[in-house]
Length: 72
Figure 1: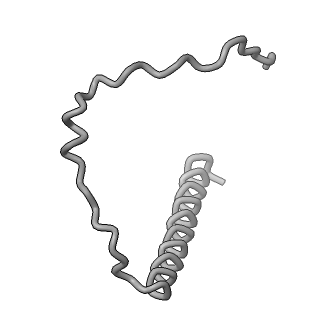
Figure 2: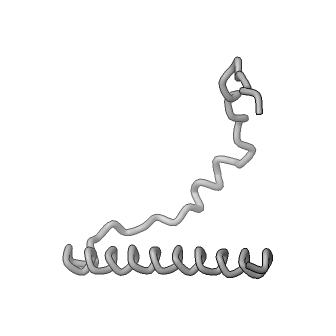
Figure 3: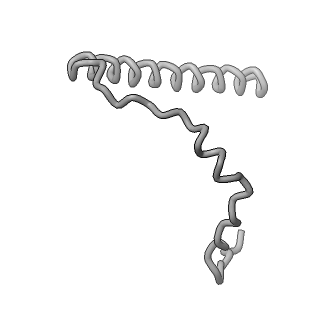
């Protein structure tokens, strides 16, 4: 495959078509700390572990699908 030379960077984004009044509908979140640092760390560790498990399941599903598709 030959190299492709890009002579100009990406064009600037178009102006948003969303009215500024929509931003007034945004939910304003309370920034109080509801969890202690230990609780927050535990939740983050649980989330990371769940993410790794989900990624592993996706990998195994793709592997199973490819083995069936190619009948290996």
